[in-house]
Image 1 (tube, rainbow, N blue to C red):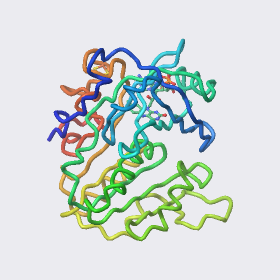
Image 2: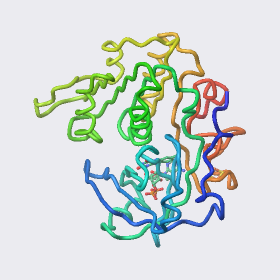
Image 3: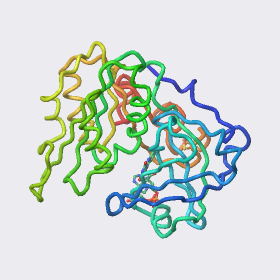
Length: 290
Ligand SMILES: Cc1cc2nc3c(=O)[nH]c(=O)nc-3n(C[C@H](O)[C@H](O)[C@H](O)COP(=O)(O)OP(=O)(O)OC[C@H]3O[C@@H](n4cnc5c(N)ncnc54)[C@H](O)[C@@H]3O)c2cc1C
Ligand code: FES
């Protein structure tokens, strides 16, 4: 089943010229983890800033002058408008150039692109969000969207795993979510060299032993490196999850972001417009997706 691409949010930013980046100023750089910084951006043009809308799971094409463009997930929730937060890992040409920029410098943004999570379908259900490593970047938008609409969901469970506490993205924010009584936030690290970590130590899938998940009433949103999909999918399928209740955020190399260049195609689908959110059912029909 192809989800929600027909409902992709069309904003004024997309309405004129989809290839034209809009200028955005870096208002904050939070060095969460070495080589994983959180950039807070605000559109220069007030008209654009006020009308910009996205849905959790969508991404932007971020351009750095002289370096090029890269797709980056929107990590902030649409319920917190005015600025956009992008969690960027330094890996290559564009992200290196971004890391040389300072607060108040200007970058280009176009988007939002992609289908995003089918939020209308999720409403009224339990929500299980499972992230490993940088997979928290797109899922954080969904976490805050759901918490800001807490009355629209039954149970909310978040499972997040990192290599060690120092590499946990949004660590302070997530540790404070673990204190909330209206959700279950389970955090785990592979190793705890400090001995100070007060949450779980071990592998991400073992968190399922601490949660009570009802597959009939739950939608699961999963994002992480390939090994996360492998073991989390095993757990979800063992629980008898229906294939269209498993939603995965999947990445591909992209160029245009708008379904023109074919760089992101997987079989007959373009990840930039039919994804990046796919159901497990999509993945079975297009095995190269995962
Ligand atoms: C929908 C989507 C959302 C994303 N969200 C985020 C996000 O929130 N945060 C984030 O940090 N990143 C995100 N990414 C990944 C990011 O777009 C890439 O890491 C991007 O390549 C960075 O650009 P760069 O110029 O800095 O690196 P590049 O110079 O493009 O190099 C990045 C790395 O990819 C390797 N590479 C180059 N070409 C290929 C190829 N064809 N296939 C596989 N690997 C290749 C390079 O060797 C290098 O190791 C997302 C990608 C997609 C598609
Ligand atoms: S990135 Fe060009 S078609 Fe998807």
